[in-house]
Picture 1 (cartoon, helix red, strand yellow):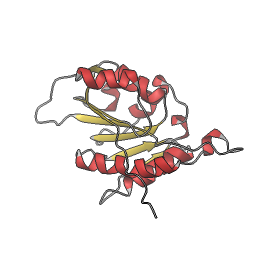
Picture 2: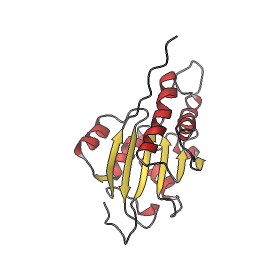
Picture 3: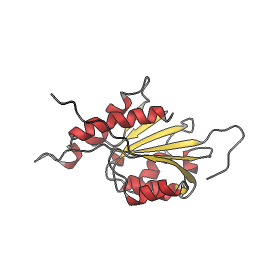
Length: 183
């Protein structure tokens, strides 16, 4: 990870894979909604981000229904949701395409949330993480499941300074919502 600047806090890229989606017959992939588990897990992801102090300054979200639903339910858990940009380039994006979008982020944004899809998100986290706790890196390598959150931190003058191997994988978590109430 790049060294700290004078009194400059690290920038954080928070990567959130959309919550579990349903597979209804006849619905195009882009329009697949969240499954019941996804409807429980997305708010849990929002609570986890708030508890970790990772509420973003800006969110970039895929236009796919399951990503938009994840964003809406997660952000509803915060006192003040961040501004969001729905970007069609994030749907099905690979690492190069994801980084292009991230690099467009204004320099004043300190914490950026990226809501999207695998395999691109998992590959992005592994590509950017030059270091991090071995168990967190191993967990991402094993699987980056629905609702997974990876927090990458690094020091840099702007988002274009985020390049492969320059970030620290600060944490990896998979928040899960509770079981639905019976009766």
